[in-house]
Amino acid sequence: MAGIYIHIPFCKQACHYCDFHFSTQQDYRDQMVESICKEIRLRADYLHRDTIGTIYLGGGTPSLLSDSNLHSLLENIRKTFIVEPDPEITLEANPDDLTKEKLHALRQAGVNRLSIGIQSFDNSILSYLNRAHDGQMALRCVMDARESGFENISLDLIYAIPGLGDELWKATIDKTLELHPQHISSYAMTIEEKTVFGNRAKKGTLKVVEDDKAATQLQILVDLLEEKNYEQYEVSNFSLPHFRSRHNSSYWRDVPYVGVGPSAHSYDGRRRAFNIRNNQQYLRSISRGEVPLTQEILSRGDKINEYLLTSLRTSWGLDLNRLKTDFAFDLFEKHASYLRILLENNLGIISNDTLVLTKAGKLLADKIASDLFEVV
Image (tube, helix red, strand yellow):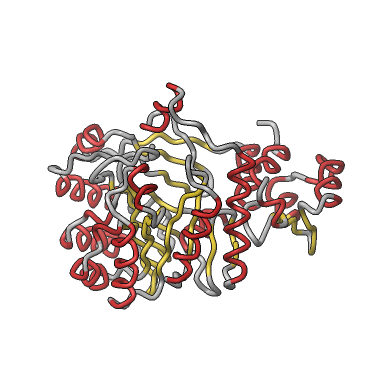
């Protein structure tokens, strides 16, 4: 099953930490949706007629779409691609957009999974991040979503925020658990160069949270969620049984997908493609019937390193036999002493020719993967 990602490049306002591609000018939103629909049709053969199992609307802020915008996008997908009878259709949303009327419209359009950008329930933290909602809106929208019939709700949280102490972080997690979401995604704040926080860090007015502190807050999250039967199936993602994100799991399992919209990425198993990160240039190119993308053919080393990086972050781990058969890469032959150290220090376990990192190992997953990389 392949996937489709749609990037909606609009937001009400810029969060101080975000470097995703978006614009706060929305006066051409309908034109953008029409162009994305046209790109969907132009990319009809990208997935070689594979059946579509997941559709993910991200951004940006897809919950800003009008009902007609959303219907147009999903209708064009269904007309252009072969979509399975019960696809996972996820829409990223901000709490301030999720009125009862909006939630009803999303259900009517076929959206069956919400990914809600809560980030925090504390008003001082939300203001610091420059979020458009407050804690009460966050609580209410989740309850309204459940009353509207949504049975698959994911909540996003951020930790390692400057000024976020461990006790406040625990309170945030407790408040989240009171809402009983099926899925939780949580990410350490990273300070990106071209953001408000990036500028503050450059000027010395923002102190970046140290890695040890971030690791402590991740461990607090893992422990509290484990007590409530959430599985950490990927370093930053937790789900109740049977509620893993099918779409994101496909990324980590090397499943092809097509990305449409400005800045969207695509992958066909052999190449990656990157759409232009400029709304006006995107619109002009699509109007000429041209998709403005750059393609990169992945080398053997690229594929090995991507597999190491993604698989070691997951609960299903790295298939050592796949490395041998698909890439002629013997991890034991290349890194015997390093793997021995991992196992001796309880950072990883090898069972049935699969390397899985332990809870302690997952705190270092990206570092371990990079240490094992094949030189490209």
